[in-house]
Image 1 (cartoon, rainbow, N blue to C red):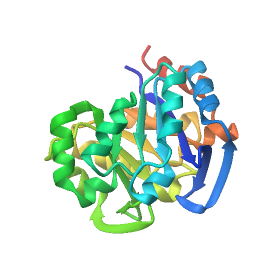
Image 2 (cartoon, rainbow, N blue to C red):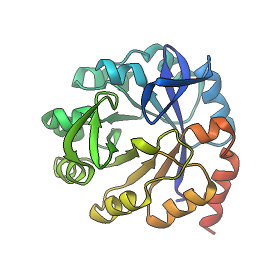
Image 3 (cartoon, one colour):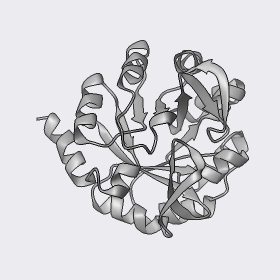
Length: 243
């Protein structure tokens, strides 16, 4: 299977936005209609969508589920959702909307028992989001820094039954620079579980390097909205690697 290239849709107040380095004061609105954005990504061949409820991440519970539900109803590809999912009841609510994968970030740091239960009950439907700044995992919508490193969190949560991780370098997210290749390579080497990379992915060359390192997928956000990366070309490049 080629490495998945997964478009990101970040939502605040029902709009499609991007933040710079996770800074809520540096918000750029790219569309007032995330459903239209989702349809366009599907038409271009996206294998799945990565949706983040940014308000939910900061508030501790989802704030844009109505918009998420409309997206799911409008498209036919899988959706993974993160942002404020910190209780089993919320996780069940999200899955009932048709979300294929639920991303747990803050809960992985603050509620490992909940994560263990979620992984046991829902298996592949649970993905662990590891969002790091300067090596330390950030929580609560990236507004607070924990004392645990990305590597320590991956090892800890893998032992609790996690099946898959998304690693995001916050300092590179939305910057159009490049991914943190050394950190991604380290995580891939330390665990046999799939790693999806996120943050700073701007060029097809970045995708080739991530695929070479063994990443299962790459989440791309701002570069798709600015035109720095063409989704169709990116998907074709990853398919060509398989020949």
